[in-house]
Amino acid sequence: MTVQINSNYLENYSNEYAQLVCERFFSGRQFITGQDIIQLTSSTQVNFFIIKSLFELWQEELAMLKSSPYFDYRDIAVHEALTQFMNVLSRRIKVERANLEPLVKVAVAQAIQVATDPVTFYQNEINKAPKGKISEYLKENKKYYKWHDKAVVFLIDKTGFGHDESSYQRAVAANYQVMKDSFESVNLLLATLGDVKAFDVDQYLVAEVAAPQEAAPKEEVVAEPILERESNFFEKIAAEAPAKASSSSEAKPEIPEPVVKAVSPPKIDAPSNGTQLNASKLKSHFASESYRGMAGIKGELSESLALNQRFMFTKELFDGNADLLRHGLKAIEEAGSFESAVDLINTRYMSELGWDPDSDVVREFVQLIYRKYTS
Image (cartoon, rainbow, N blue to C red; front, side):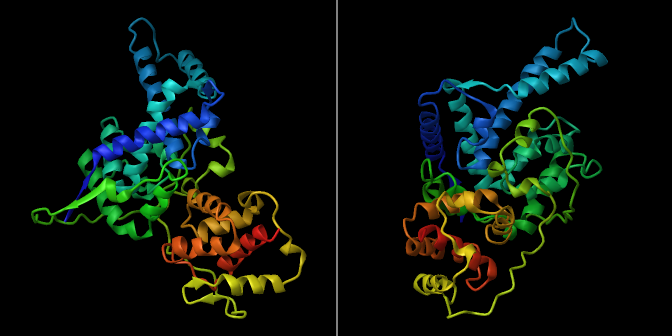
């Protein structure tokens, strides 16, 4: 069986998504800024792909400027002045709706591709790189890759690895095969688009029978951790983004180690049921506890998390993806009751992300939900 992409569905979905996002934001506004773009949608990947498009457009304009035969752009004074100009301009993004909407459309289509077919997406990124500067290109754009980025970031600074483009592309494919089981679920990534418009994977990916093909010889590629380097200009926008718009994939581009779950505590009144949470028993157990930490939560659930809790929940429960944590908290907020929130967790996260219902971290997460709905 092979899978074909329904390009018509992707086109229509991206169009509608971009229109809905822009209608929502530009109601009463004329322009959008760089910081607004970082928080435009619930999908961090979509937001950063919009910024990436702006950066690429700026690079095209700069290349045209430097093509003038009348000025010496290699002069050190000109270079320093131009660098300062770029830094200032990158903090002065100002886009009208007519110009933003096509960028959102492209960003959504790219996000869907990187979620469903990261190998093809990152191979296409390698195709864009200037000849002989693939690792430099990936390093420059790494800050924009938020989903499945570990399939490609290990190639950064590998200047002695595979001098030709095809070697880098084969390395991405081989590395993905090694690491794919550690990547986030496609459904969970695409769920972050759902607050604007639900995405139907079954309509997008259509299975059909394909003729058998001879298997290609395997490439042995060792994925090694690399050190992240900072780059200039539009990176400042990413660096200045609020903490809630960040992704843990920005922290270290190293190959992930196997997830070690928290040590299971002694069971109290058997609050769980196998691999499911029991809402009534959990509610009874939390109600019997009495200490100041059990005070109700009045505001938004996402704002109630302490810094260490946000880090712990992201790492231990949401596969290191801050985007998924934020989307999960929003869905729980909209559940309406503790029981409905627990049902949501059982349906969407327990098996999908392999949560241990009796672990300390799951218990602490559910306890916050109880406090939210009993405030």
